[in-house]
Image (cartoon, rainbow, N blue to C red; front, side):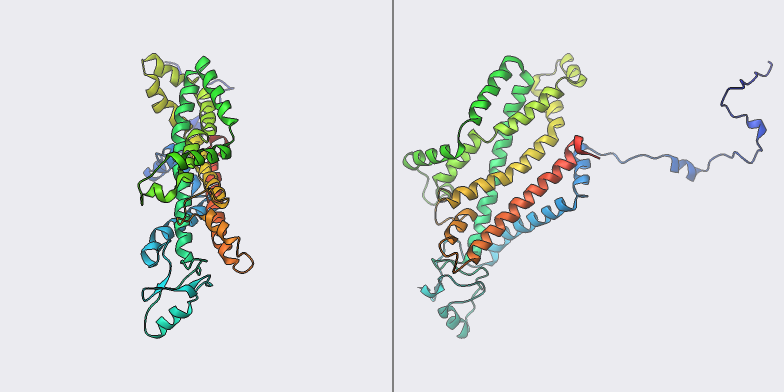
Length: 357
């Protein structure tokens, strides 16, 4: 067969014009260098990797971990309880009122001089001769517990309501969103106060139980979170689902007979993961601030159970004489809320596809 003539405009290289040592087979090492394969990852792993590259988010995580470890370990070390009135040799120590940090009363100092041991009052004492450090620790516990519990309530209700409304659409979506608009118009603080008044008369808890220690004000706060605060989450998830459900893979799932519940769980909600994580993370500081505000105005946790807001409210009376009593709970509130807000911003930057660089 005659040799085919090469088109003069072709970009094919004519190897006959080059020497034999110019083109040599690639070695095995060179072949392996060409096999550029990225590590298998998931959306969550990729987001967490980006999160830990954010110094502010990492710093916030460290601060939150330190706070959580402190409120867990401190009650095991400090021999006082949040409601214990200080005593020496079985007698109430009346001189232990409003002590400065790391100081002892006269009775305690005499007891130490006789060879006894006394754990220091790290933050001093309050007006009722109770150790202030352990009260701040328990107040932090209550505030964090309220924040996380409220965020779980908001997440569950908002995710279910928004998923159903967004997926079904049409008249169902119209009716459900009008209900959301009505709930948006309700004043949450007024409802909390009204619920507290009603529950004070109607609701009775087992004496000594956790709910009895919290009081009806905190129970009404949890009820209001379940009734009102989920609407923002529901709207965000509904908006995401209205966009996602028009994609081809949702149509494919419908065509093979997948039920709506399975489509929402397996195909839609995983694609709303960024919105869910970000909204939940930002809901926690909002709940903590709401609880602190209610406790500050006197309708928070039931005494003697402390919270950061109630401690700050009690510190107002002696602000000029004992300013450190306000500083300690205020700093704790600022650290928690600021850390959670920075962590929420870091989660948004890491998991929101629109913000990825």
